[in-house]
Length: 287
Image 1 (cartoon, rainbow, N blue to C red):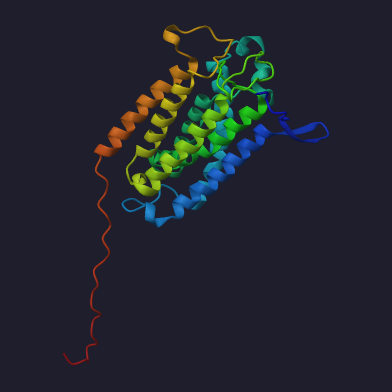
Image 2 (cartoon, one colour):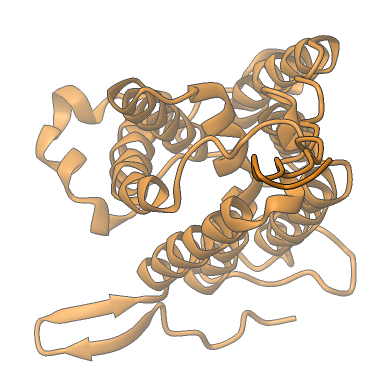
């Protein structure tokens, strides 16, 4: 099927353009922020431990996360995919509006931002990572839909009936791998983590939710790399590996270790309500 006639620019205001990709980032951050504060406010989720941060602290953390996403995503893209920019055109590194953001770089940027914020505010960084991991698939899903609208990061050629002929990708229909990722990395992973936080109450175990996110994303990304077209400016890697696979598999392994560690660590005992103590009788009251 032909690629839909999408305009990657939502609105033009003179020399300025508001792009769908920017809207996806903003929507993901805002909705993730509101969802995180709703989790913190829900006492049913914190049966053995208090929330890792107050609502006000979550509000402050959003700016740190936003900077981590943007700086980490851009620097990660340069280091992992286009390192030649460092010596050929270093000014291009600053031009994020030209495209080029890496999920793994953004994840590392967010990791650093959260740990620095936790240290500055005397918070448990691992538990704060659990909270933010639970909301991350919201932004991930929006970002992958924006990739599809932009007609970028397309899949390998396919004969399946829903193959899409992307502009600039040749005449062959290709997997709409961006939509696969939006569904699996976004919606499905969100529902799995929603079960972990609201069903199994795993926010009471340090590192388990962020570990589940890392395993889920790492395995999904690795599987979808088999239908996603590899970047043509990267050299071929042995054993059919791609850069996405080589970054995602260690992530999944580390996530599995976090789950194992968190499930072995006994959570604090359930807080017991204080026993009812009969009110003392006045001294002049007969026994």
